[in-house]
Each structure stands twice: as C-alpha cells, then as structure tokens.
Length: 281
Image 1 (cartoon, helix red, strand yellow):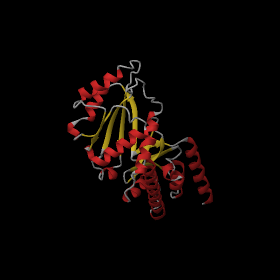
Image 2 (tube, rainbow, N blue to C red; image 1 turned 135 degrees about the vertical axis):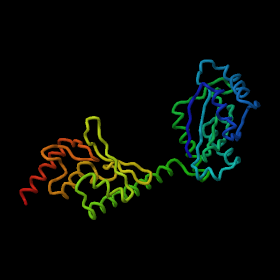
Image 3 (cartoon, one colour; image 1 turned 90 degrees about the vertical axis):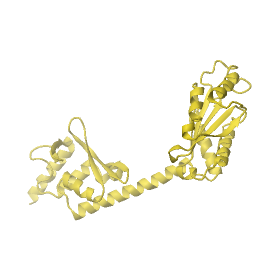
Image 4 (cartoon, rainbow, N blue to C red; image 1 turned 180 degrees about the vertical axis):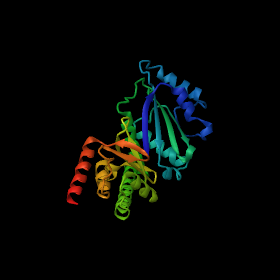
C-alpha cells in the first residue's frame, strides 16, 4: 500500500472530488462531522479553522492506495479499519475527518480529508508529511498482512532482473547464430525474438545508443548489460564484417536507410580494428 499526503487550501473542491458519485464513492470514515454534502462538511471545517486564520493550507489531504490485488479483497469494513489505523499513526484521531473509497479503474483507493486545525485552534505540523504518510501506510499494510511499498519495489526489481537476463540471452543467441554484420541486421534478428531495438539519434544526427523494448519494458543497452552499450555493440558487429560497419573513410554508419554519425572515439576504434584485421589478412 502507498500513502501520500499534503496540506491544501481548496477544501471544498477536494472533498467534492472525494465525494464523486460517478466514481461510486462510499464514505468509510467520518469523525466529528454531521454534514451530508461537500458544502456542509467544508462549512464545519471552516468553523474550527476560523480559530487559526494564519494557517492558509488548513486541510490535510491523503490518498491510501492498496495494490490492485490487495484491493480486490478489501470490503468497506477493512477499508474503514485501514483508514482509522492510518489516522491513529498520524496522530490525527481527535481532528475532524472524512474519508471516501473510490473503486474506479479496478484500483481501490481511499481519499481522506482531515482538518489541519484542532479543536484547540492549533495547526497540525505538516513537516515532511509526504514521507510520514508513506511510512504510516507501510506500517498499516504490514500489520494487516497487505503488500507494502518495499514489497512492490522488490517485486519490480526481481522482474526487471529477469527481463534483463532474457534480453541478454536473446542478444547472445542472435550474435552466435546469425552473426549480424551491421546494425540493421542486428535489429532485424532481435525483432524475430520479439525484442524491438530502437536507435536514439540526437539533433546532430549522432547515434547515441539503443533502447531495447521487450514485454512492456524499455531499457538502454547499457542498462541490460555493458556488452550491449553502443560502443561494445558496434565493435562486436564490426568483427563479423570484413569491411567493418563504417561507411568508407568516414565515421558514419548506415542505419534504417539513413547515414548517421558515431562518436569520434568509437569511430577511431573501429577504424583501427579494421586496419589490424587487414594487416593480419
């Protein structure tokens, strides 16, 4: 579960969004309030807020977002419990508050609005409220056996690690089985294995590198593996061609029907490699 929080001044508009009937909004928590419309709730907030006119951002807005999978099993009772535990951890249990659940787009989430001004007229300190909201939501998720932010991050890291490994394996298979002699051939053979290789060319018409798109992920070559950086890839392709990949007596290469420039450093290395190969022959 992810928790987000901030101080706001547009109380009525925000509560109106939370109470949006088009999103099938349900009230899951209400404390120290009697109103039944955004206008009435805002009016009740304002009565308390009048005690502290110096505070401009006098309402606290929070969003509690369980993962999609966790959200499928969360009824109104559990969402109420999650909200109340979060409020307690944020030390806001004595403040006016109202919370709504939205079930739109398959993603269940709670919008919570709390009066920043307490009944004593003091403003709740909102220092680092975003980070504190995140930590409080993480504690609630852990206590209730739900997926935490760290769990999600760990899953994403493991998934990305597997994607990198798969792309690298496909790259190695293409280089070993097909021996591509230039970038176009390499891109064509990679595409046969469902890896789309997208060149990145800057405004100066210089080839900066490639992105590898696979199973919904897009990674730079160097992010997949250092052997797949533009420099290393260019060298490997040149090894497969007697003439190399450079257009004769230049630092350019042919790519998708166009002539693009390589960096001076890599062009020099490729030229030297071809000279050595020629001398050896």
